[in-house]
Image 1: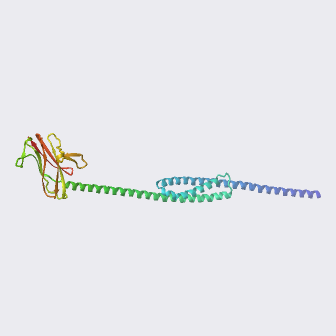
Image 2 (image 1 turned 90 degrees about the vertical axis):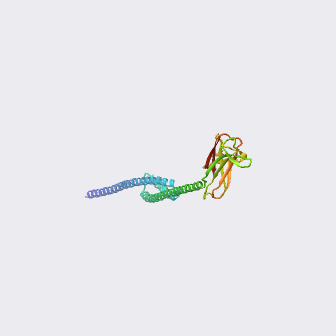
Image 3 (image 1 turned 45 degrees about the horizontal axis):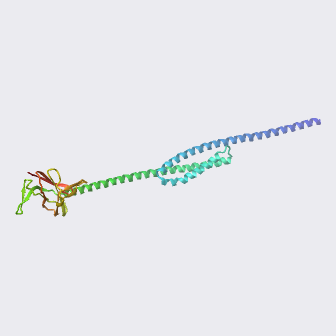
Length: 308
């Protein structure tokens, strides 16, 4: 009887031990599976963070390239964004350091999440700055183009005015030229009584006389006026005699130097004047003698005579 009671007690004890072992094993398995599940969840979260971080970093690279183009066009804008880029670069470095770990704790994942949120906000601010600076740069370009256009227009206006002024000055200059009339060339000789007579024979010619009328001109200012007489002999040579006042003059409009035979200095008062110019000829030859008269480098009169 006592033996039967002992056996029952042993059976109950064994059952209790088995139940306890089952409970212990069940709890252990729960923690094992729970740990695996938690580790899997942490790994999935880390994978998501890695992907988010990569996408944000790619976006940042694009914005950096856009900023480089903008600041290249206007170096003054560089200082405006350098602080933002420095902050973002520091945030990127810290996040990359955390995500470089193979396994991360919950605390580290939470810290990485918070840093990525801040990183995304910083990039968003930088994107706004890119848009703002792009608008400023575009406006600056438009302003420069307008300024260039205005400057070109002003230069053209100045050039046109200069051309007009030159044209007016040219008109005044040409308007100041005399309109000579009655240009005559004669061979002359002096009689014993001092009277000069015109001759047609070269051997009888002692001097060549050039006469002309200046005509009226109200544009030409009053004062001293020089007219230059060029006499060309039958050989086509300019008669140049230094003792009689021959010299050279500058032709108008940047022309070359040209010899003249005599200079006639007159006192101009805007009324008609009769001018006489003499050139002594000791050895006149037969042929045609041509005369050209110049004022300020312009040809204003001509004539000729033939001596036999």
